[in-house]
Amino acid sequence: MTHFYRMPTFATLEVHDLRAAARWYHDTLGFRFVFEIRETEERPALIHLRRAHYQDLLLVSTSTAAPAELRDAHGGIKLTFRVEEDVDALADQATDAGAHIVEGPVDTLWNAREVTFQDLDGYRLTFSRFSWIPGLV
Image 1: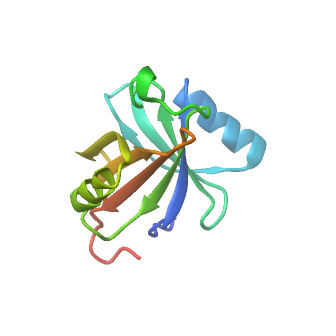
Image 2 (image 1 turned 120 degrees about the vertical axis):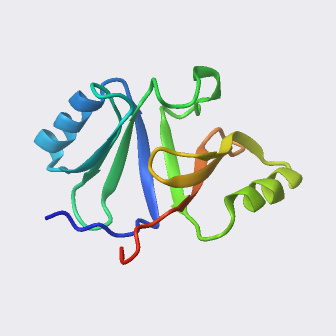
């Protein structure tokens, strides 16, 4: 049985073929399937993989990621930080300080409210406030 826990930080990778990428991570590096969220019946929007405790990857399709002109300059790598604070307030505070918002705040398919910033070097950092199922650790 898969153990679900709160991931404080994790990498999100944009990939061209979600299923092929998930197979590669499984077959070559020993990652296990945790779950997927579907965009349509035939097409996943996100696949969650885990190699060990706190070694989680979220794979998202380049087609469901930010538009090409908004993607980061570093190969589709995004760091995501779980926060407990109000994401909208964080977005307001950061933009007042001059931050560039790439996307959000927005509600996601994976029950979170997120805002994504782009830093001075083009890296994307997402701050995500999850809606957790009661009792989940």
